[in-house]
Amino acid sequence: MSDIRIGVVGIPGKWSTEVLADAVEQKTGYRLVIDMAGASLDLGSKRLLYNGVDLCRLDGLLVKKISAEYSPDTLDRLEMLRVAEAAGVRVFSPATSMLRLIDRLACTVTLVNGDIPMPATCITQDIDAALAAIAEFDEVVLKPLYSTKARGMRVIDSGMDEQTAREVLESFRNDNPVMYIQQKLALPGRDLGMVFLGGNYLGSYARVGHGEAWNTTIHSGGRYEGASPSQQIIDMATRAQALFDLDFTTVDVAESEQGPVVFEVSAFGGFRGASEGIGLDAAESYVAYALETLS
View 1 (cartoon, rainbow, N blue to C red):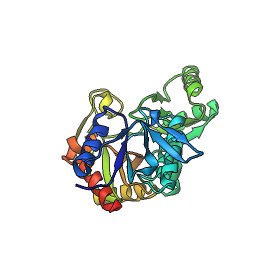
View 2: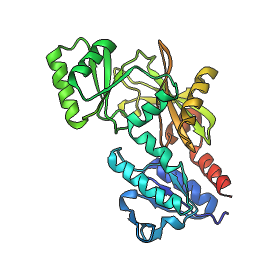
View 3: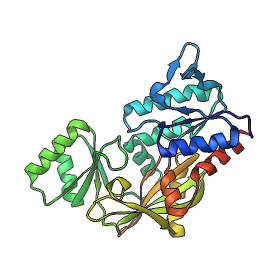
View 4: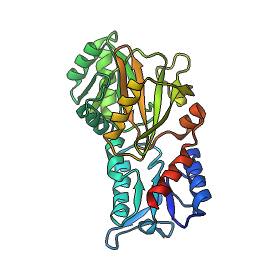
């Protein structure tokens, strides 16, 4: 039993958070699940407090989830963790690495600058430019900059009459002033979650779509199964995640008619897909990695 104290940042009661806390407790005897909504940062004393515990005095923090849904507030919670890092706490993954993955555009720009293949994408605040992108791409997905699991996304195709398309875009822009417009690719009804720990590839699972749902998320009825991508795809995903200096992540990849593309790199990684798809206990592996790093 280790005497290292590691807190788990996540959503209390959620499966992935609790199994990670279970794994920490099993190895160290210490259990602390931290909901950042209840944390307070005292900048004068440089203390980050949660339920009477100064997180700046822990040895490590494993971040499984920083908020239930992504928003600019999520970025502020990560900024708070930087104070713990400055005090010597090892945060898994580094806060600055996760910061670049909460905003979809920040992730996309990093991937594009790193020459990672992605679907054709237009970023604009201009309705006419958005209409031109729809005409060029034929069918698009409108994606909020802050969202997960396809929440808030809309599909538009070039067959929609211009007035209706304009109204849909204006409605979307009301909540998303900077519009992220991505070409909807013809996919084989599944995409891949490729798991990495400490930059090393552990395996892949597939998210398989259900019925007429346009996306493969579990929330839309999808399911997990094992996958064996080619070495070319593994190499591409390895290069993608290496741009962010993450401790644990999954890279979302699709095999399109134009070749393999990356949709995004996850700030936190998927435990359930790894478990149900390939039988990988990601929580146990992550804790073992953290303890080795801290020892």
